[in-house]
Image (tube, rainbow, N blue to C red; front, side, top):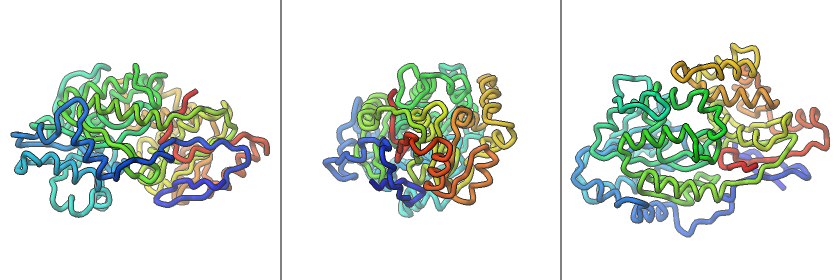
Length: 422
Protein backbone atom coordinates (compact mmCIF):
# COMPACT_ATOMS: atom_id res chain seq x y z
CA UNK A 1 0.00 0.00 0.00
CA UNK A 2 1.20 3.50 -0.85
CA UNK A 3 0.54 6.08 1.87
CA UNK A 4 0.72 9.78 1.06
CA UNK A 5 2.21 11.81 3.90
CA UNK A 6 1.49 15.57 3.98
CA UNK A 7 4.70 17.59 3.83
CA UNK A 8 4.30 21.36 3.56
CA UNK A 9 1.94 22.04 0.65
CA UNK A 10 2.94 18.75 -1.01
CA UNK A 11 2.81 15.06 -0.15
CA UNK A 12 5.55 12.46 0.00
CA UNK A 13 4.78 8.86 -0.85
CA UNK A 14 5.66 6.01 1.47
CA UNK A 15 5.28 2.34 0.63
CA UNK A 16 3.80 0.93 3.79
CA UNK A 17 6.11 -1.80 5.09
CA UNK A 18 4.62 -5.31 5.29
CA UNK A 19 2.90 -5.85 8.63
CA UNK A 20 2.85 -2.15 9.52
CA UNK A 21 -0.14 -0.63 11.31
CA UNK A 22 -1.88 2.29 9.59
CA UNK A 23 -3.50 4.52 12.21
CA UNK A 24 -5.67 7.35 10.94
CA UNK A 25 -8.76 9.35 11.72
CA UNK A 26 -12.07 8.21 10.26
CA UNK A 27 -12.31 11.73 8.84
CA UNK A 28 -10.45 10.35 5.81
CA UNK A 29 -13.55 8.26 5.02
CA UNK A 30 -16.21 10.74 6.13
CA UNK A 31 -18.30 12.24 3.35
CA UNK A 32 -20.50 15.22 4.31
CA UNK A 33 -23.98 15.58 2.85
CA UNK A 34 -23.48 19.21 1.89
CA UNK A 35 -20.87 21.54 0.41
CA UNK A 36 -18.53 23.50 2.66
CA UNK A 37 -20.58 26.67 2.24
CA UNK A 38 -23.84 24.86 2.92
CA UNK A 39 -22.47 23.28 6.10
CA UNK A 40 -21.40 26.67 7.43
CA UNK A 41 -24.69 28.34 6.47
CA UNK A 42 -26.80 25.58 8.05
CA UNK A 43 -24.79 25.78 11.28
CA UNK A 44 -25.34 29.55 11.47
CA UNK A 45 -29.06 29.12 10.76
CA UNK A 46 -29.41 26.45 13.46
CA UNK A 47 -27.22 27.59 16.37
CA UNK A 48 -26.74 25.43 19.47
CA UNK A 49 -27.77 26.89 22.82
CA UNK A 50 -28.37 30.49 21.72
CA UNK A 51 -30.05 32.76 19.15
CA UNK A 52 -28.70 33.29 15.65
CA UNK A 53 -25.75 35.66 15.55
CA UNK A 54 -27.80 38.01 13.35
CA UNK A 55 -30.24 38.36 16.24
CA UNK A 56 -27.44 38.91 18.76
CA UNK A 57 -25.98 41.61 16.49
CA UNK A 58 -29.18 43.69 16.39
CA UNK A 59 -28.58 47.18 17.76
CA UNK A 60 -24.87 46.54 18.38
CA UNK A 61 -22.47 49.20 17.13
CA UNK A 62 -19.08 47.65 17.83
CA UNK A 63 -18.76 43.96 16.97
CA UNK A 64 -15.49 42.03 17.21
CA UNK A 65 -14.86 38.75 15.40
CA UNK A 66 -11.89 36.75 16.67
CA UNK A 67 -10.26 34.66 13.96
CA UNK A 68 -7.24 32.34 13.83
CA UNK A 69 -3.77 33.25 12.60
CA UNK A 70 -1.47 31.82 9.93
CA UNK A 71 -0.56 28.74 11.99
CA UNK A 72 -4.11 27.37 11.94
CA UNK A 73 -5.78 25.81 8.88
CA UNK A 74 -9.15 27.45 9.49
CA UNK A 75 -10.60 27.87 5.97
CA UNK A 76 -11.48 31.52 6.52
CA UNK A 77 -11.92 32.18 2.80
CA UNK A 78 -14.96 29.90 3.09
CA UNK A 79 -16.21 30.64 6.60
CA UNK A 80 -15.61 34.34 7.19
CA UNK A 81 -17.60 35.85 4.26
CA UNK A 82 -20.65 33.77 5.25
CA UNK A 83 -20.18 34.64 8.94
CA UNK A 84 -19.88 38.38 8.26
CA UNK A 85 -22.95 38.32 6.02
CA UNK A 86 -24.96 36.65 8.78
CA UNK A 87 -23.76 39.18 11.38
CA UNK A 88 -24.75 42.08 9.13
CA UNK A 89 -28.10 40.56 8.15
CA UNK A 90 -30.12 42.63 10.67
CA UNK A 91 -27.46 45.28 11.26
CA UNK A 92 -25.77 46.27 7.98
CA UNK A 93 -24.19 49.43 9.39
CA UNK A 94 -22.44 47.90 12.40
CA UNK A 95 -18.71 48.40 12.85
CA UNK A 96 -16.87 45.07 12.65
CA UNK A 97 -13.27 44.50 13.71
CA UNK A 98 -11.61 41.19 12.87
CA UNK A 99 -9.07 40.43 15.57
CA UNK A 100 -6.40 37.89 14.56
CA UNK A 101 -5.71 35.59 17.52
CA UNK A 102 -1.96 35.11 17.38
CA UNK A 103 -1.72 33.93 20.97
CA UNK A 104 2.01 33.86 21.65
CA UNK A 105 2.93 33.35 17.98
CA UNK A 106 4.75 35.89 15.83
CA UNK A 107 2.55 38.40 13.96
CA UNK A 108 0.92 37.24 10.74
CA UNK A 109 2.60 38.79 7.68
CA UNK A 110 0.74 40.63 4.91
CA UNK A 111 1.44 37.76 2.51
CA UNK A 112 0.10 35.21 5.01
CA UNK A 113 -3.02 37.30 5.59
CA UNK A 114 -3.80 37.42 1.87
CA UNK A 115 -3.16 33.68 1.58
CA UNK A 116 -5.47 32.91 4.50
CA UNK A 117 -8.29 35.42 4.08
CA UNK A 118 -8.10 36.43 0.43
CA UNK A 119 -7.38 39.85 -1.06
CA UNK A 120 -11.02 40.93 -1.11
CA UNK A 121 -11.53 40.51 2.64
CA UNK A 122 -8.19 42.12 3.46
CA UNK A 123 -9.00 45.19 1.36
CA UNK A 124 -12.59 45.60 2.55
CA UNK A 125 -12.57 44.62 6.23
CA UNK A 126 -10.82 46.00 9.31
CA UNK A 127 -8.21 43.49 10.53
CA UNK A 128 -6.13 43.94 13.69
CA UNK A 129 -3.32 41.59 14.75
CA UNK A 130 -3.19 40.75 18.45
CA UNK A 131 0.22 41.32 20.09
CA UNK A 132 0.45 39.45 23.38
CA UNK A 133 3.56 41.33 24.55
CA UNK A 134 1.86 44.75 24.49
CA UNK A 135 0.48 45.12 28.02
CA UNK A 136 -0.87 48.57 27.18
CA UNK A 137 -3.30 46.86 24.79
CA UNK A 138 -4.73 44.61 27.52
CA UNK A 139 -7.49 44.88 30.12
CA UNK A 140 -7.42 43.07 33.47
CA UNK A 141 -10.45 40.81 34.00
CA UNK A 142 -9.55 39.22 37.33
CA UNK A 143 -7.87 35.98 38.38
CA UNK A 144 -7.95 32.69 36.53
CA UNK A 145 -8.98 29.56 38.48
CA UNK A 146 -5.27 28.69 38.45
CA UNK A 147 -4.44 31.98 40.18
CA UNK A 148 -2.85 33.71 37.21
CA UNK A 149 -3.84 37.18 36.02
CA UNK A 150 -6.42 37.28 33.22
CA UNK A 151 -5.59 40.06 30.76
CA UNK A 152 -7.03 40.15 27.27
CA UNK A 153 -7.02 42.54 24.33
CA UNK A 154 -9.03 45.72 24.97
CA UNK A 155 -10.49 45.55 21.48
CA UNK A 156 -12.41 42.49 22.66
CA UNK A 157 -13.41 43.83 26.08
CA UNK A 158 -14.72 47.07 24.55
CA UNK A 159 -16.93 45.26 22.02
CA UNK A 160 -20.73 45.36 22.24
CA UNK A 161 -20.67 41.82 20.89
CA UNK A 162 -17.73 39.41 20.89
CA UNK A 163 -17.85 36.36 18.61
CA UNK A 164 -15.24 34.02 17.15
CA UNK A 165 -14.50 31.55 14.39
CA UNK A 166 -12.12 28.63 14.52
CA UNK A 167 -11.80 24.90 14.05
CA UNK A 168 -11.89 21.87 16.31
CA UNK A 169 -9.18 19.22 16.31
CA UNK A 170 -7.52 17.13 19.01
CA UNK A 171 -5.07 19.26 21.02
CA UNK A 172 -2.08 17.79 22.79
CA UNK A 173 -2.61 19.52 26.14
CA UNK A 174 -5.85 21.54 25.93
CA UNK A 175 -7.80 18.41 24.93
CA UNK A 176 -9.33 20.02 21.87
CA UNK A 177 -8.75 23.24 19.96
CA UNK A 178 -11.58 25.64 19.16
CA UNK A 179 -14.20 27.41 21.25
CA UNK A 180 -12.64 29.05 24.30
CA UNK A 181 -9.13 28.89 22.86
CA UNK A 182 -9.92 31.93 20.69
CA UNK A 183 -9.72 34.00 23.90
CA UNK A 184 -7.03 32.12 25.84
CA UNK A 185 -4.42 31.94 24.45
CA UNK A 186 -5.75 33.60 21.27
CA UNK A 187 -6.13 37.21 22.40
CA UNK A 188 -4.61 37.04 25.89
CA UNK A 189 -1.58 38.75 27.34
CA UNK A 190 1.63 36.71 27.40
CA UNK A 191 1.44 36.84 31.22
CA UNK A 192 -1.90 35.05 31.07
CA UNK A 193 -0.63 32.51 28.54
CA UNK A 194 2.41 31.80 30.74
CA UNK A 195 0.22 31.16 33.80
CA UNK A 196 -2.09 28.85 31.88
CA UNK A 197 0.77 26.94 30.22
CA UNK A 198 2.77 26.45 33.44
CA UNK A 199 4.90 23.36 34.09
CA UNK A 200 2.50 21.90 36.67
CA UNK A 201 -0.45 21.99 34.26
CA UNK A 202 1.53 20.63 31.30
CA UNK A 203 2.73 17.74 33.47
CA UNK A 204 -0.82 16.87 34.59
CA UNK A 205 -2.12 13.54 33.29
CA UNK A 206 -5.42 15.36 32.63
CA UNK A 207 -3.76 17.74 30.16
CA UNK A 208 -3.78 15.31 27.28
CA UNK A 209 -5.15 14.93 23.77
CA UNK A 210 -8.92 14.52 23.64
CA UNK A 211 -9.56 15.15 27.35
CA UNK A 212 -11.50 18.09 28.80
CA UNK A 213 -12.66 16.44 32.02
CA UNK A 214 -10.57 17.76 34.91
CA UNK A 215 -8.13 19.38 32.48
CA UNK A 216 -6.69 22.41 34.37
CA UNK A 217 -5.67 24.15 31.14
CA UNK A 218 -9.19 23.84 29.72
CA UNK A 219 -10.68 25.11 33.00
CA UNK A 220 -8.68 28.35 32.76
CA UNK A 221 -9.55 28.77 29.08
CA UNK A 222 -13.26 28.27 29.66
CA UNK A 223 -13.23 30.83 32.48
CA UNK A 224 -11.41 33.36 30.28
CA UNK A 225 -14.02 33.02 27.52
CA UNK A 226 -16.81 33.58 30.05
CA UNK A 227 -15.14 36.66 31.51
CA UNK A 228 -14.56 38.05 28.02
CA UNK A 229 -18.27 37.53 27.25
CA UNK A 230 -17.65 35.41 24.18
CA UNK A 231 -21.25 35.27 22.98
CA UNK A 232 -21.13 33.10 19.86
CA UNK A 233 -18.76 30.78 18.03
CA UNK A 234 -18.52 29.30 14.55
CA UNK A 235 -16.24 26.26 14.63
CA UNK A 236 -15.62 23.87 11.74
CA UNK A 237 -14.11 20.42 11.47
CA UNK A 238 -11.83 19.79 8.50
CA UNK A 239 -10.42 16.76 6.71
CA UNK A 240 -6.87 16.03 5.59
CA UNK A 241 -7.35 18.30 2.57
CA UNK A 242 -8.40 21.16 4.89
CA UNK A 243 -11.98 20.99 3.59
CA UNK A 244 -14.94 21.61 5.91
CA UNK A 245 -16.76 18.36 6.76
CA UNK A 246 -18.86 19.68 9.67
CA UNK A 247 -19.72 23.00 11.29
CA UNK A 248 -20.97 23.95 14.74
CA UNK A 249 -22.27 27.36 15.73
CA UNK A 250 -23.84 28.92 18.81
CA UNK A 251 -23.03 29.08 22.52
CA UNK A 252 -19.29 29.02 23.19
CA UNK A 253 -19.61 26.04 25.55
CA UNK A 254 -22.50 24.00 24.14
CA UNK A 255 -21.57 24.31 20.46
CA UNK A 256 -17.93 23.56 21.25
CA UNK A 257 -18.80 20.48 23.28
CA UNK A 258 -20.98 19.10 20.48
CA UNK A 259 -18.17 19.72 17.99
CA UNK A 260 -15.64 18.04 20.28
CA UNK A 261 -17.83 14.94 20.53
CA UNK A 262 -18.06 14.78 16.73
CA UNK A 263 -14.26 15.01 16.47
CA UNK A 264 -13.78 12.45 19.23
CA UNK A 265 -16.04 9.96 17.44
CA UNK A 266 -14.08 10.43 14.19
CA UNK A 267 -10.55 10.76 15.55
CA UNK A 268 -10.22 8.11 18.25
CA UNK A 269 -7.82 5.30 17.37
CA UNK A 270 -6.63 2.29 19.36
CA UNK A 271 -3.04 2.55 20.53
CA UNK A 272 -0.45 0.05 19.43
CA UNK A 273 3.03 -0.73 20.74
CA UNK A 274 5.45 -0.16 17.91
CA UNK A 275 9.22 -0.14 17.72
CA UNK A 276 9.09 2.59 15.05
CA UNK A 277 6.30 5.17 14.66
CA UNK A 278 6.14 7.45 11.62
CA UNK A 279 3.95 10.56 11.74
CA UNK A 280 3.44 14.06 10.31
CA UNK A 281 2.03 17.37 11.50
CA UNK A 282 -0.65 17.39 8.81
CA UNK A 283 1.20 19.50 6.27
CA UNK A 284 0.82 23.26 5.74
CA UNK A 285 0.13 25.41 7.72
CA UNK A 286 0.69 23.25 10.81
CA UNK A 287 4.14 21.96 9.82
CA UNK A 288 5.83 25.31 9.19
CA UNK A 289 8.14 24.97 12.19
CA UNK A 290 9.55 22.58 14.77
CA UNK A 291 7.55 24.24 17.56
CA UNK A 292 4.19 23.29 16.04
CA UNK A 293 5.43 19.84 15.05
CA UNK A 294 5.72 18.76 18.67
CA UNK A 295 1.95 18.22 18.58
CA UNK A 296 2.03 15.24 16.25
CA UNK A 297 5.02 13.79 18.06
CA UNK A 298 2.77 13.26 21.09
CA UNK A 299 0.55 10.95 19.00
CA UNK A 300 3.63 8.95 18.01
CA UNK A 301 4.76 8.96 21.65
CA UNK A 302 1.45 7.36 22.68
CA UNK A 303 1.96 4.51 20.18
CA UNK A 304 5.67 3.83 20.71
CA UNK A 305 7.27 1.31 23.02
CA UNK A 306 9.30 2.73 25.90
CA UNK A 307 12.47 2.72 23.80
CA UNK A 308 10.66 3.14 20.48
CA UNK A 309 11.89 5.38 17.68
CA UNK A 310 9.79 8.27 16.34
CA UNK A 311 10.09 9.52 12.77
CA UNK A 312 8.56 13.00 12.35
CA UNK A 313 7.88 14.16 8.77
CA UNK A 314 7.41 17.93 8.91
CA UNK A 315 8.68 20.52 6.43
CA UNK A 316 9.57 23.24 8.96
CA UNK A 317 10.50 25.77 6.28
CA UNK A 318 9.99 28.51 8.91
CA UNK A 319 12.67 27.06 11.20
CA UNK A 320 12.32 26.50 14.91
CA UNK A 321 9.23 28.65 15.50
CA UNK A 322 10.37 30.24 18.75
CA UNK A 323 13.74 31.66 19.76
CA UNK A 324 13.29 30.80 23.44
CA UNK A 325 12.20 27.29 22.49
CA UNK A 326 15.29 26.86 20.30
CA UNK A 327 17.77 28.30 22.79
CA UNK A 328 16.43 26.15 25.63
CA UNK A 329 17.62 23.02 23.82
CA UNK A 330 20.70 24.49 22.17
CA UNK A 331 22.13 25.57 25.50
CA UNK A 332 21.25 22.36 27.35
CA UNK A 333 23.51 19.35 27.74
CA UNK A 334 20.59 16.99 27.08
CA UNK A 335 16.79 16.91 26.74
CA UNK A 336 16.57 15.25 30.18
CA UNK A 337 18.27 18.30 31.68
CA UNK A 338 15.65 20.50 29.99
CA UNK A 339 12.79 18.42 31.40
CA UNK A 340 14.22 18.33 34.92
CA UNK A 341 14.80 22.09 35.04
CA UNK A 342 11.36 23.00 33.69
CA UNK A 343 9.60 20.81 36.25
CA UNK A 344 11.14 23.00 38.96
CA UNK A 345 9.72 26.24 37.52
CA UNK A 346 6.86 27.87 39.46
CA UNK A 347 3.79 29.24 37.65
CA UNK A 348 4.80 32.87 38.13
CA UNK A 349 8.24 32.16 36.67
CA UNK A 350 7.06 30.52 33.41
CA UNK A 351 9.05 31.74 30.41
CA UNK A 352 8.35 31.93 26.68
CA UNK A 353 7.68 28.60 24.95
CA UNK A 354 8.42 26.65 28.13
CA UNK A 355 5.38 24.41 27.58
CA UNK A 356 6.50 23.27 24.15
CA UNK A 357 10.02 22.70 25.46
CA UNK A 358 8.64 20.63 28.32
CA UNK A 359 6.70 18.30 26.05
CA UNK A 360 9.49 17.95 23.48
CA UNK A 361 12.01 17.28 26.26
CA UNK A 362 9.74 14.57 27.67
CA UNK A 363 9.60 12.88 24.25
CA UNK A 364 13.32 13.24 23.45
CA UNK A 365 14.26 11.92 26.89
CA UNK A 366 12.41 8.68 26.21
CA UNK A 367 12.63 8.21 22.44
CA UNK A 368 15.16 8.60 19.68
CA UNK A 369 13.70 10.94 17.05
CA UNK A 370 14.59 11.13 13.36
CA UNK A 371 13.21 14.32 11.84
CA UNK A 372 12.52 14.58 8.09
CA UNK A 373 12.41 18.31 7.27
CA UNK A 374 13.48 21.06 4.91
CA UNK A 375 17.27 20.85 4.45
CA UNK A 376 17.69 24.36 5.86
CA UNK A 377 16.47 23.09 9.23
CA UNK A 378 19.25 20.50 9.64
CA UNK A 379 21.55 22.61 11.82
CA UNK A 380 18.70 23.86 13.99
CA UNK A 381 17.49 20.31 14.61
CA UNK A 382 20.96 19.12 15.52
CA UNK A 383 21.38 22.06 17.90
CA UNK A 384 18.18 20.84 19.59
CA UNK A 385 19.47 17.25 20.05
CA UNK A 386 17.31 15.90 17.20
CA UNK A 387 18.71 13.85 14.32
CA UNK A 388 17.94 15.19 10.85
CA UNK A 389 17.01 12.83 7.99
CA UNK A 390 16.92 13.79 4.33
CA UNK A 391 13.97 11.51 3.49
CA UNK A 392 11.45 9.16 5.05
CA UNK A 393 13.25 6.20 3.48
CA UNK A 394 16.54 7.35 5.02
CA UNK A 395 14.93 7.67 8.45
CA UNK A 396 13.30 4.23 8.22
CA UNK A 397 16.62 2.67 7.16
CA UNK A 398 18.39 4.20 10.19
CA UNK A 399 15.59 3.12 12.52
CA UNK A 400 15.62 -0.49 11.25
CA UNK A 401 19.40 -0.64 11.66
CA UNK A 402 18.79 0.08 15.35
CA UNK A 403 15.61 -1.94 15.91
CA UNK A 404 16.20 -4.83 13.52
CA UNK A 405 14.40 -6.13 10.44
CA UNK A 406 11.53 -7.55 12.49
CA UNK A 407 10.73 -4.20 14.11
CA UNK A 408 7.04 -3.41 14.50
CA UNK A 409 6.18 -0.25 12.50
CA UNK A 410 3.16 2.05 12.85
CA UNK A 411 2.29 4.93 10.53
CA UNK A 412 0.08 7.87 11.59
CA UNK A 413 -0.33 9.93 8.40
CA UNK A 414 -1.66 12.94 10.33
CA UNK A 415 -0.61 13.00 13.96
CA UNK A 416 -2.60 16.12 14.86
CA UNK A 417 -5.89 14.59 13.70
CA UNK A 418 -6.01 11.59 16.03
CA UNK A 419 -6.79 10.82 19.66
CA UNK A 420 -4.84 7.76 20.79
CA UNK A 421 -6.70 5.60 23.29
CA UNK A 422 -4.72 3.17 25.42
